[in-house]
Amino acid sequence: MSIHFRRQTEKLKKMVLTLGGMVEQALRDAINSLDQRDPELAQRVIRGDRQINSTEVEIEEECLATLALHQPVAFDLRYLIAILKMCNDLERIGDLAVNVAEQAKFLCSEEEIMHVPYDLTAMASRAQMMLKNALDALVNVDTTLAEGVRAADRQVDAIYREMFELIEAAMRENPHQLTQLIHYLQIGRQIERLADHAVNIAEDVLYLSNGEFFKKNAGDENDTIGRIGHA
Figure (cartoon, rainbow, N blue to C red):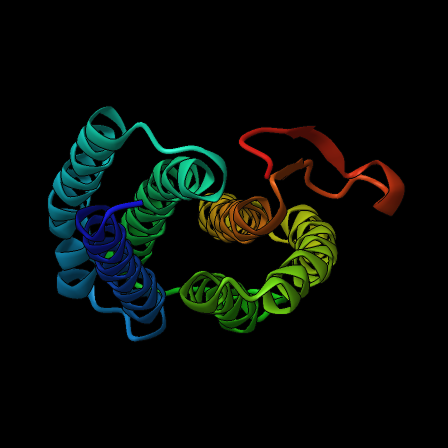
C-alpha cells in the first residue's frame, strides 16, 4: 500500500486511542462521582458524551473515506474494519459511563446512602483495566494481551453474579431501601456490560491479527465464527 495509506492508518490509530482516552476518563469520573458523592462530576460525564459521539463519527467518516480511496485487501482491509468496530464499542462504553453517572447523580441526591454489600469500585477497577489492556493490545497488535482481556471477562461476569445475589438478598432485608439498591444493581450491570465491550475490542485485535471473528465466552474450540480479508 502507498505511503499515503500508511499515514492514514497511523492517523486513524491515534484518533482511536484519543477516543479511548476520552472514554477511559469518562468511566473513571463516573465511578469517582459515586465514590465522592460529587453530582457536578457526574454531570461533567453526561455533558462530555457529546464530544465522544462526535469523535466517533469523525473517525468513522475518515475510515470510510480511506476505504473508498484505497480499496485495501487482506490485513489492511481487516485493519479498517477493526477500527470501525472498535469505535462503535468505545462509543457504547461512553454511553454506559453516562448511565453510571446518571445513577450516581441520583444517589448523590439522597440524604443518606446505605452501605451496599459489595465493592462496586473494585469491580469497576477490573473493567477499567480490561479496557486499558484492550487499547494497549491495539497499539502493538498484541494477541497475548488481547486473550488476557477475554479471560478477565469471565472474572467480571462471576463478580457480577455474586453482586447480584448479594444485592437481591439486601433488597429482601431492606425493602425500604429498594430504590437505592436498584440503582446500585443497575450500576453493576453497566460495569458488566462495558467489560463485554472491552472484550469486543480485544477480539477485534485478534481479528486484525489473523482474520478470525470470535464469539464471547464460547468454548475454546468453537470461538471462531468467521473469517474475512484473510491473507
